[in-house]
Image (cartoon, rainbow, N blue to C red; front, side):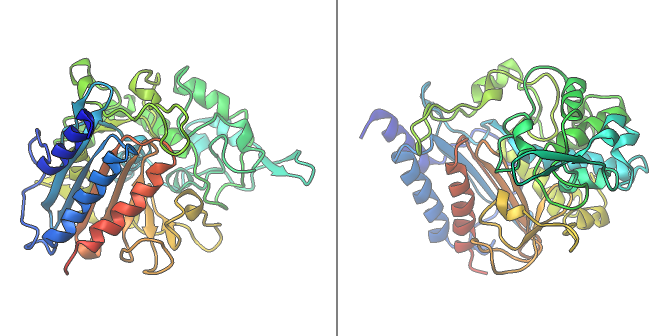
Length: 418
């Protein structure tokens, strides 16, 4: 066994933890988990690390508001031979979307951001966007919007905006590639760029994963007069004690960042997490934040508690229930399983996918479970009926990340005894 593999294996066994636990702890038996079942999680990550498919991981499981399992596995930076620890900081990618949506909903609670408000009230150029309709020859015919883009559409991805480089839609080929905004320029430059493009669909007709929450973050900034990170720090992160969550990792914390393997294990091609070395010039609500799994567990537990944690109320219980309900009516084409193939039978609420039936999906779970994940290898889900909250951090920005999302959910539910 190589020195690195031996170190990784020893860390799996030891479960290195250098941070304060994010929630009060309990035993596996008291929480309705089997020790053998939780050991299968250890064995799974041990196999993956030894196979050099992922450098390391952190997983946190809470039930009934108490910490059941909080472990670090392997390495956070293989090239530097740095061990994974429970206070490792991950690029959260699209798990940022849920936090940005919570921040926006706080403004809704304050009577400042109604969901029926047209987006053009805040950025008029969105009202002038045309809808691109693909023709058989691959060309586009531009049509007027049949109704304006609403704030509601931004939160549930029915705005008609899209991401570049996805599928065969010719409109998507015109958008910036990837699921994060270009690194160059600020939010105004980004909005100016995308509002010159056509929409992929009529607003309110299709769930199309998109730059919608980046635009929502810009609306929050316009309403508050603050950068999105400043606003979330004041209203969400600081009250919840999320001390390592931010849009810019301070220099003194950068050694704690999780780095991917140099090459994608599935393709052999070079891979990177761009924001580790080249941060964007604005706080993009769709995918630019960083944080620890302990911090995100506290955020998830707040939602599971109906908007409150340790006496700090972030949202009302009624708003959380509304947020985590399906908002894709029968008039909207549901394409959630196009983005997350293992989540057939899910709808989408405000910032989160929501399970609508016990079957269909390729993973166990309960009706009402809500979730979203990050393109760099992080995952989050909460199951209200089981009083369960789970977060997973890996640095796996390739297609392998989808394998870990599915496997971890199988492993967690498979370890439960009640």
